[in-house]
Amino acid sequence: MKLLLLADGRSIHTIRFQKAMKSAGANVVLASLERGETVDILLKKKSVSNSLNYFFVNREIKNLVRKSNPDIVNPHFASGYGFSVAVSRVWNFKPTVLHCLGSDILISPRKSIAHKQRVIYALQRAKHIFADSKYLKTEIQNLYDKSNVSVIPWGVEQEILDTYDAEKNSKFENSRLVNILIPRPHQKVYNNTFIIGALANLLKEKNIKITFPGWGDDLEDFRKLVHDLHLEGKIEFYPFLERDEYINFLSKFDIYLSASLSDSSPASLIEAMGAGLIPVVANIPGVREWADHTSAVIYQPNNPVSLENKIRAIINNEIDMEPLLSANHKRVTEEALFENNINSTLKIMQDILKHGAK
Image (tube, rainbow, N blue to C red; front, side, top):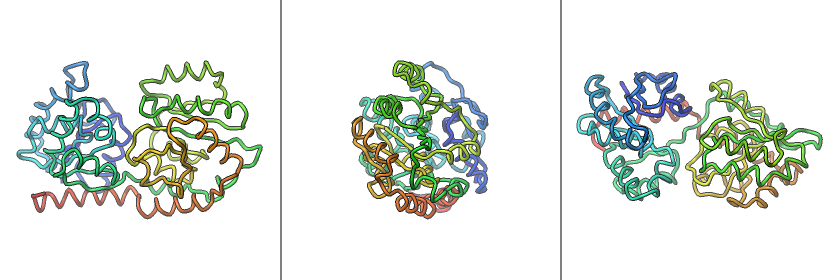
């Protein structure tokens, strides 16, 4: 099966999907407006505006589909490449299978009526849609109730599951450094500045360290806040890592922390659960399929006292973590192995080619 993948060439999700689909036997060609090491065809930008580029690129996509003759066109992100493919009208002669990633459904349609219409148009023109959670599926069908949606989480590699250590994070010794990972980039939706504000006192009192990505639109503002709070020695940044490096890097941490204001089922959360990190997440709808009071430590969104108290309870061993960590690892192993989920995705695409209709 020949697949034309239209997605952000910089994204780790794109790179993982592209590599895994190739390993599963698909012939994948990645076309993108964004430069990336695995991009096969760099599409031409005609504007400084991303929104306009997604519109203007439609003719190039149409020509590319006619020339390369893929079996399936697979845009990722409804309000971006999903819209581009819809405008190109290639769905008239090639099946379009759309991957929705979260913010394209949960955030973009709320920006304006025009944004909402872009997303709806993309959904209308897709023969089949993939979502990573039941919550996201519901939101997709609230926008367009005729959408044919399959729920398949991104999942984790076996190598992540193999890093699990049943005893490592069950109990903390008083003298041990507790390492906290926030793997979400510095963008408004991920709310990273809230975290250091909420945990500033705890960082100064306790033997803990927090590590953030070294990239994102708001990185410089974040660095300034770290400086202003005198937390340079307690906050670290990591560079973009190759996948095998990231898996090894992930295993060094004790706690996964997210303050995101909007999410579907975050791949980073499922990865952390598979690796045996203690998940600490804000109580928002999108994480609840994987993170509830039986599988994670939940705090109230944007409530600094709530977050600080939960982290204190963890490092003071006030919560029995062993059953939670063990159950998380078992569930991820059974439901979210990346290879299995890619095979499920590929089978649905093959069925579309075989049977044609929705």
